[in-house]
Image (cartoon, rainbow, N blue to C red; front, side, top):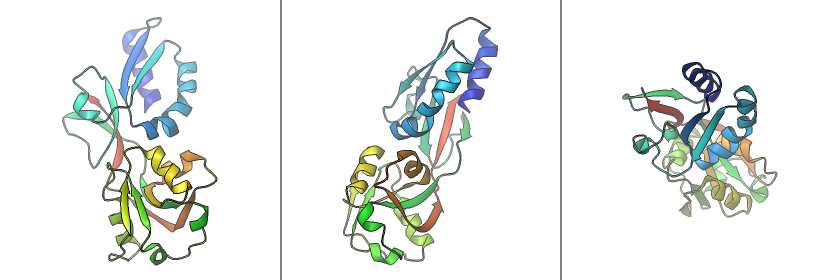
Length: 194
């Protein structure tokens, strides 16, 4: 999606002009999905530059100097041009000590780690595994996806996040617990004014 946007902007601006996109993006998405691809984009479009903004509430700030945003939301705002970015499946992520667990019921009474922008991730997951009564000892909220992954790697609890977060972490201390991945009602969306 970013490459197609770059190509469209290059055609609109003409050759040789410096183009700049002010893009808001969640930090974890930026680290795991955007940054690894920026080198290839720059090679294709050397005059295309991106200013990255990782502050929250990106969609609400589109009228405040941002050109576009990648945001986590249940659905796209119909007043915006939006493209859903891939599948977003929720998985249980734990540290080395939890990798031995074989059944989801075994996590009852442990601490669950959740990002505030995925408040229902655990609820959807436990419904999908057929354990609607499964309860944690506590739920710890972290406003940083990277901090949640670090906490899970240190054995502080079980994170319920997207499969792409686990894959992007490349952290050998983290393990997907159980063979369950649940489609989330939340997705990453690329959005801009029409």
